[in-house]
Image 1 (cartoon, rainbow, N blue to C red):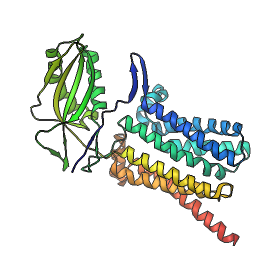
Image 2 (image 1 turned 180 degrees about the vertical axis):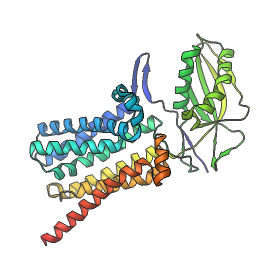
Image 3 (image 1 turned 30 degrees about the vertical axis):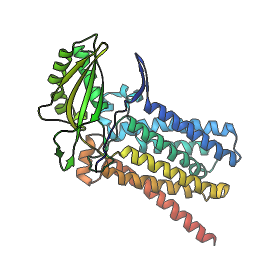
Image 4 (image 1 turned 45 degrees about the vertical axis):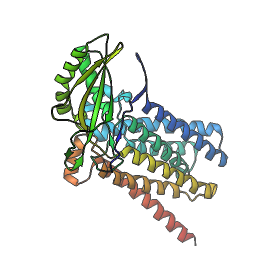
Length: 368
């Protein structure tokens, strides 16, 4: 009945010494490249030049990055970033907000339309098509990072995000112990079933690897026996995904290059909310693109933009019911107004979308 997916993907697809490349960065770049290609096709249909496309893309790229970063800083963690202002510039450490990106793009398009004397809604109608496509890539990047996680769930396609956060925790410990920790790999196993708050947990066998040149099998085993109970209990990120099995067995096997220690735990299955949003964004992109090709230059101004706002942010509002709050401050907001920050920020965008479509319909009626 249950086919939980064990998510073993590491956020970095290249990791050779100090050379590292993350899936999120790759997918973020792919979002811009794919968007540039589609927008180029649209601009060509509309008789725009490559210079027009390059200038407009520059506005949008800068606005997206700055808006997404400042949105996270101001909406989700203002206390932290105001106390550590230098960290605002550390985008590679994560922390981008889609609502902030939306605001940044709206402002950039306004500035572009004023400077180059182009209709604001004309630009937005075409831009949001590729924004929907970009959302597909960005949410896949979140999936690769095991972030923006869903709530625990019994759905058969739930994901267990075990390795990334356990890996981060053990790397921190390794710096103190110099034990030669390398990586984890998690797979399903079978032992006594267990549940947590009504959710069936997934029995896991976790393989933790060490450098055989830096430690012995006994030392590696003792290191895990001593520290894993503390990590799984006290590390919030790990505790969201793992529950230690009663009296877990730690077994060590040594070969020429590395030591493998296996131990038992339970994985907490969760909604793959990143995947839900990625698939929805892809479907929205296809829908808007088909709608554009139906009208092309005759597209009623505000139609595509209005539909985009209503569909995307209505779905975002609904998906928030399946997602964990991203920062602790959201819990207080949710208790006060029965909505989290993502839902609260989505409402104005939906309202604007409805207003645009009503205005469009009213203007058509007047024309008749």
